[in-house]
Image (cartoon, rainbow, N blue to C red; front, side):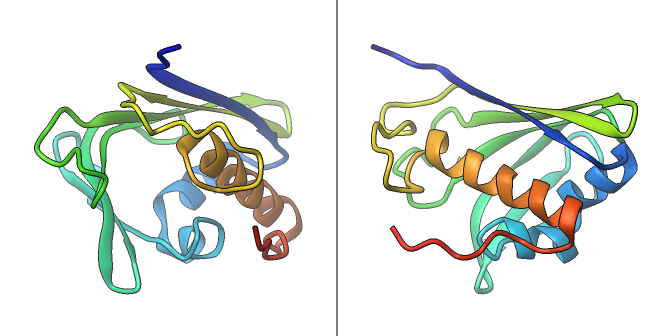
Length: 151
């Protein structure tokens, strides 16, 4: 079976402005995204990078940036063997629902190996993104991230 996209929806008790800040600020990403800092000027066509321990781990170009509504960018994971080929695409859509925000993550143009059929790992986008977004939800709702998990 061939998968070309992964979609994950989560509801977070927060304001769109706070969620947007958490998606675009290293102050937050370092806490919920496996220690990753994020960098961009948030202009369409600009670069976006995620770095861990001072080294770029993922990078891309901003496709769409509508604060508090939608953020979309190309995505290349350093070292996955796909550098120089067509990157995948990540989109975060924020939809306010009273005191809650529906966050939809869509990761498109996936390659073989991007999805991992195991339930005891963070390997693969289908395992990593739910862990990252659950950690984000916990951070915004409680002020704390989830306890570290060893798998």
